[in-house]
Amino acid sequence: MPKNKTLKVVAGILALFTGLVGTIIFLLVKKIITFEMAFLMFVALLAIYIGIGVLIAVYRFMEKLQ
Image (tube, rainbow, N blue to C red; front, side, top):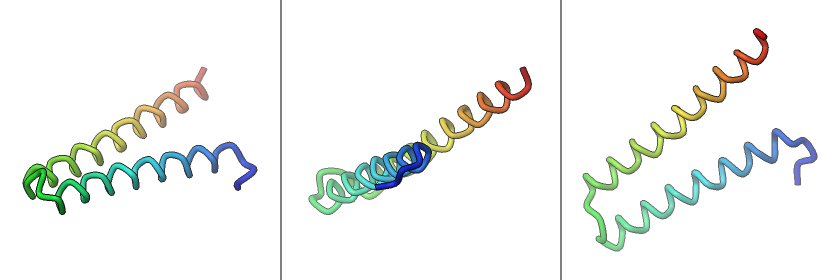
């Protein structure tokens, strides 16, 4: 287990992202959702993670300016 707090957070985020992607793939394989819906879910998931990452980066930048 990583001792650094940042590494723990990154590992948690990566595990959550992998779990969500795995769930989408499971739903696709079981034919619960269509390929188009799975693709939209992947794009939305990626957009959410990128958007939140940008917000966190801007917040940290603003904290350094003050």
